[in-house]
Image (cartoon, rainbow, N blue to C red; front, side):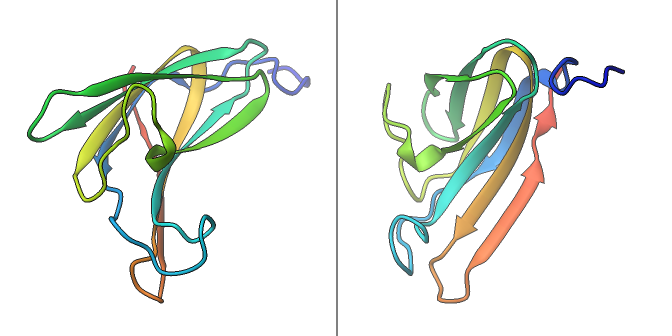
Length: 130
């Protein structure tokens, strides 16, 4: 193990989040308290990570791929409800996602559900698929 931060690759190149749901409305100031799903990506490597996200639904074909980059030795927090290209992810519709990268990354899934004044926050590590 090296003493230089970012010198070793950690993570995997394929991740899955089997549970996704963007509530259709929120309670509280926007955008901080908007109900949302977040994909938190850590790239601890020395290379730019090219990331592709595919979104799967129960009753229709998948959406995506959504393409983004994560700079070396950086993190990126991506709200699924802010994805626009190639299409927006509909609210109030269950979905799942697969995140693929050309370098190892770490993926965490977080949801803020602010439909009630008593907010709920849930977070979990994604499933490392490779």
